[in-house]
Image 1 (cartoon, rainbow, N blue to C red):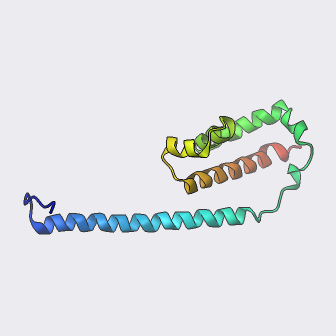
Image 2: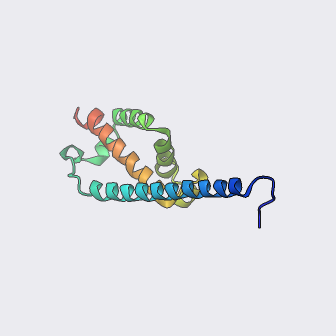
Length: 132
């Protein structure tokens, strides 16, 4: 019904088929990324807790050197991870607002926050807790 006879029918059908193939592979890639994110979430829950994270959190919270190290770790984050971390943890923006603002789905937001927290933990382990 949309064919306007501006081109041959075969050209029009080929363009439709090309879009369908691209959509198919995008769907497969989205599914693969979702499954990978779910596996990452499951495996991260099984990681042993570092002994260096034990202790008095209020003492660490009040330590200016810790916050300087923390800021440097946040600055090292990729932009897409830093923006969700700042919006969620610093600005206390709701997940729904973050998803709408960034145009991402709930799985993607969860994955970004997980990767961000994991990166921050690794950075703090290397640059703060190892020195303690």
